Image 1 (cartoon, rainbow, N blue to C red):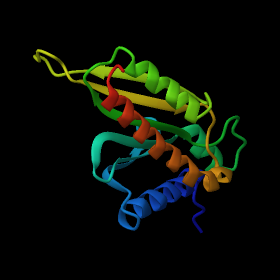
Image 2 (cartoon, rainbow, N blue to C red):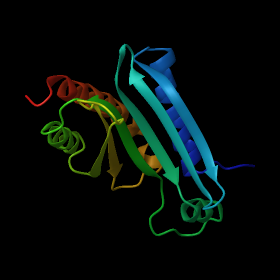
Image 3 (tube, rainbow, N blue to C red):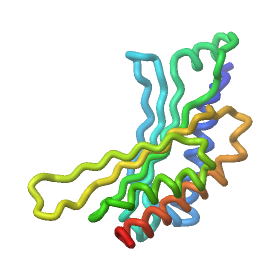
Image 4 (cartoon, helix red, strand yellow):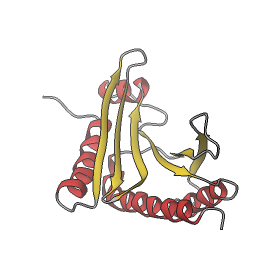
Length: 177
C-alpha cells in the first residue's frame, strides 16, 4: 500500500486549511495554485496564492517544497541528515514610496516569526512611469524544515501569514510616515 511522504501529508494539511478559509470562512480568496514535480531535480513543490477577501492590495503565496534527497530517503527508509520540507512565504504589494517601508516590513516579519526567517525584498516597476509604483516581492524563507510533527502548527502559522498581510497593507497605506 502507498505510504504518503511528509511532503504529501503537509501539502494536504495546507490545502485543507487554506481552502476552508476560502470556501467556508470566506476570509481569503485563493488566486493561484501550483503543484509541481520537477523531473530535472526530482523535487516536489506546492504554491498556494491568495488575498484577503475584499483586500486585493497584498497577495500572499505559501510555498512548500521537498528535494530528491528528502523524498528518496523517506521512500527508501534511509537516514537523511536534515529531513523535512522547506517552507517559504512570499508577499506581493504595490508601494509608491519605499524609503522606509521596506525596513518596516522586514522588522515586522522578523517580529512575527522571531527572526527564524531570512527576508528578501525585490523591487520592480514598469518603465516608463513618471512616478513609479513599485512592486515589492517580499520573500520570507524559514530556517527550520517542517515535518509531520508540525501539522498542528499550520493553523497558527497561517494566522500569522494573515497578520503579516494586514501589517504590510498598513505599511503600504501609510507610505513613509
